[in-house]
Amino acid sequence: ALSALPLDELTAQRDQALRDYEALVRRGLSLDLTRGKPSARQLDLSAGLLDLPTGHTAADGTDCRNYGGLQGLAELREIFSGPLQVPAAQLVAADNSSLSLMHDSIVHAMLGKVPGAERRWADEPRIAFLCPVPGYDRHFALCERFGIEMIPVPMDDQGPDMDVVERLAGGDPQIKGIWCVPKYSNPSGVSYGDETVRRLAAMPTAAPDFRIFWDNAYAVHHLTDTPVEIADILALCAENGHPDRVFVYASSSKITFAGAGVSFFGSSPANVAWLLGHTAKRTIGPDKVNHLRHVQFLRDEEGLAEHMRRHRDLIRPKFDAVEAILAKELGGSGLATWSTPEGGYFISLDVLEGCARRVVSRAGEAGIALTPAGATHPYGDDPRDSTIRIAPTYPELDEVELAISGLAVCVRLVGIEKLLE
Ligand code: PLP
Image (cartoon, rainbow, N blue to C red; front, side, top):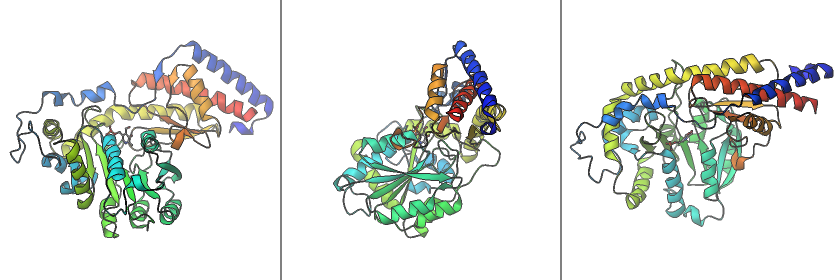
């Protein structure tokens, strides 16, 4: 580790790092690693959707062009039922964004009591959510939007620290929810262990209307041949006497078209009836033509898995490149650690405490755009200032390689400067 070097050697290393950085800036790069978007080549995998559907009639005779069918096409719900661990009868297929379903769930909970609630959330003196960190910035933005206080909870390689979750949720009736990305989490790549899932389902909560926002955005987004399987939260909640505790979300945004996919909500019969009751006021039905073409394109669960393997073939080399470059440039330096995800869309890079903002800003000056440091934490505040989210899917492979090599130069420079402070 560089921290073990004598001062003169470290100073020499710093001078070299500075020269490398200046050379990097002179290259005038313009690269973007900010958002976890599918690349154009990934979107091309679903080009067939643009020629579908053939016909317009669903299996039960529904004319998909017309109004109605609030819960979404049954045959589409069948395809996703297994991967999302929700019985098709308890699954809703909606329009193109699961984030909007999460948004609407909160709005409906504010304005109309969720099953089991004593009052509407809008009538509560204070509402708080537990936020495992690092986490997804748009979850945190939703909380800010609705004045929901955020309480960070540390994560380990099995998910959120359950001792902390149980203590907080068990003691404070104003804590109404927890954000969970249970598989290949954004951004750490962590998948929840069975015991974590069981404890989430079983724990006593002070709030009778506590909800787990189970955002299974990466349920089928495997990077390896051995897909991670997580425990069945919906069944475990029911078995433990809390059938209404979990709201499951997912979408095909990173399966077919990010802007024109299908989103899903799964939960207990009571919660599904609650959501659909409110949804009926805002729409007469979802885009069933899109549902039908997704059914015809994906066919069945195996068709979905096959399609995801094609995605993997495109993105795996990018994840491998990040790993190889970070290992070569920073391995053994003691300046950084990083995740090696088995699925999902992100790699989480942890630099020395107090360095993430400086690294992101140095990279920005060198033309490498990174997600703002702190975005992985509530209120944009990473108290250790050390986590950087890397999103390698969107740029082409050679751009990923350039960007990560450049990022490594920044990490090295800022890290050595820190050691010299
Ligand atoms: N949830 C997580 C954890 C995500 O990472 C993303 C996108 O990056 C989304 C939800 C967005 O989902 P959708 O496109 O269905 O709104």
